[in-house]
Image 1 (cartoon, rainbow, N blue to C red):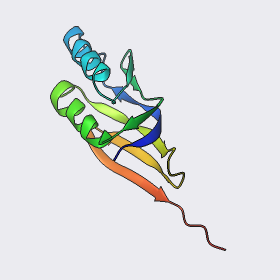
Image 2 (cartoon, one colour; image 1 turned 30 degrees about the horizontal axis):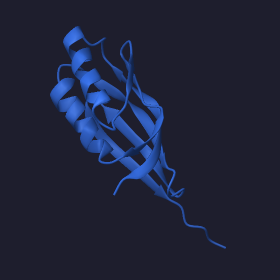
Image 3 (tube, rainbow, N blue to C red; image 1 turned 30 degrees about the vertical axis):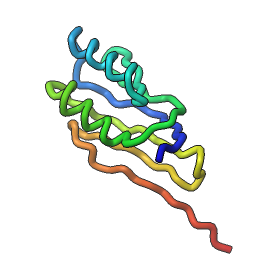
Image 4 (cartoon, one colour; image 1 turned 180 degrees about the vertical axis):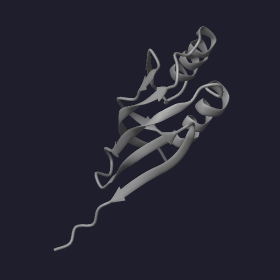
Length: 108
């Protein structure tokens, strides 16, 4: 099931990607719900979209397109369908180390 999610944040590459990598990234971003914007060596993720398996898309990007680069950063996300569902995606040295989900419980 897809969920309407708001993403906000960025990931930083260790250097600007070369022309071939930029071309492959643009193809990926245009043909998937995974829509990042590349500015210099920064991947900006500010969008509201229906996304599924966003961790899988990040793993694909790192392992098949950016394998010669080092990626770091943090993106916050929040569900627009379930306001108690939000968290962060953190990448350190091409490793997705944490996806925190915060489920709030209201206590009276």
